[in-house]
Length: 290
Length: 290
Image (cartoon, rainbow over all chains, first blue to last red; front, side):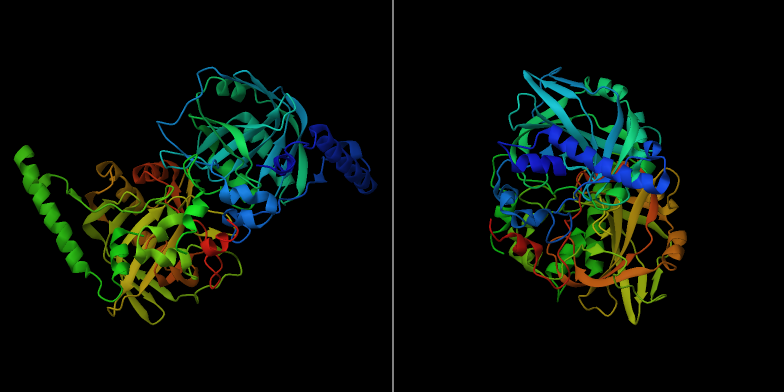
C-alpha cells in the first residue's frame, strides 16, 4: 500500500482529503518547474518532476515486515491483528457474487507516477461499484512477488487498486490482480506507464505519464470473478476492515517490463503470508518458545 | 533444503550414510517395479517410480517458516539462531577469493528426481573443492522465489547444491545460484531434468532421469565469483555452521519451465529474510510488544 493510504489509515476518522494531497503534489510540481525553468528556459515542456516522502518502513530486516509493529505505536495491528492480509487463497475461498463489481477508470492525461522506495504508484481517478457501495480510486501500485498466494503458490507480481469510500467514511477497498510474467502478453496501459520508470529511478521521485487509457483492462476486469474477504492493509499501519477483491484470473506482463519494475522499486515488497482470518496473529503464535 | 539434509542435520554427529539412503530408495524402487510388472508386463522399461517421505513442515501459516521452531524441539535454531539464512546480500558482502571453488559433476544415468512436497530435488554424485576443503554432492534442489536477495531484490528462483564433508564430519556446504527467468536462455541439463516434472506431480513421488550431463553449467560455475558467508540451513532444523557460496551472477531459465517447477512443487518455498549475521534472531526481535 502507499504512503497516501498509510496517511489515510493513520487518520481513520479525519483523513487527509484527496484534494489536499493533489494540492500538495501540484505545489511541489510548480516549485520544481519554476526552478527548472531557470536552467532550461522551456518550463512548459519540461517533464513533471517532484518529490514525495518515501516510506519509513522497509522490506529488510529490523525495519521489515516482521517488525513493523515495533516501528511505530500506530502499527500495533501488524503484530496483533487477527484479520491481516495477505492470506492464502484456494478453490474453497469465498467468491464475490458474479457481476457484483463495476470498475470505471476514464482515460487521463498527465498522470502522476511515483517511486515511494517501497513501491511505484499511479495516482488516477476512477470509481468502483461493489454491490451497493460506491468507491473512489485513490491510486494503484505493484508488489513483487505477489502478496496473495493461490493454492500456496505465488505469482511474480500483484497490482492493487486502492479505493476510498464515496460516502466520505474511512473505509478502504482494494481490487487486486495477480500478475504472471511471460514473453508474449501485456496490457498497453501497463507498458505505457512503465515506460516512464527511467524517470523515477530513486525513492521520492515522481513524474507524469502524458496519457493513460486502461479501457481494455477495465473491460476485462469487469468480466472476471473475484475472491472476496475482509482483511487489512498489507503495509503499516496494517489497518483492518479492508474489503479485498482478488481476481481469480491472473493478468499477464512482459518479463522485461516486470524486471524493470522490480529493479526500480529497489526491493522485494511482499508481506509474508498471514494466519487464517480470525486466528491469532502469526507473530503471536511464533512468539511462543523463543 | 531437502528431507535428506534435514535427516542429516537432525543427526549431526551420526548422520545417515548416503549409501543407506540409496539402499532405501533402491529397495522401494524394486518393490514398485515388481508390482508394476504384474500390471504392465515389461518392467525393465517401466519408468522408475518410488516414494520418498514428504516434508512435515510447510510454507503455509502455523506450520510455515514463522513457526518452524514450534513444530519440533530439534528446530529451536529456526527461532533463536543468530546466524540464520537466507540473508540480504549486497555489493559490500564478502566474496570468496577468485578461483577458490572447483565443482565437478560427471554425467550420470538414471538420476533420481524427487518431489518432497516442499521442493523438487535431484540426487547426483559430484565433488566440490573449496579452498583446502573437499566436499561431496548429496543433492540439488530449487526454491521459488529466491531465498537470498541481492540489493534487497529477489530473483524468481534459486538452486542449491548441497554438499557433505568428504572427511566424514557433519559439516555442510551449499553452492547457490540465483535464477532469473526469461524467454530465451536456459541450461540443457535443467530442461532435461524438468522435462520429467510430469512424472512426479505429487509430494512423495520420485522418478529417474535417464541422462544428466551438466558439463556446460559446471564449466560456467567454475568461472563465477561467489558471495561467501557462514549461515544455516533454510529449512528445519535450521542447523548453523553451514558454509554458503552464492554466485554473484544469476543463471537463466525459461519462463515456462520455471512455471512448471513452481506448480509441481505446489507451494512457494522461500524462507523470509533473516536478521544480519550475528544479530538477535528476527523472530526474537519481533516478539517484543506483541
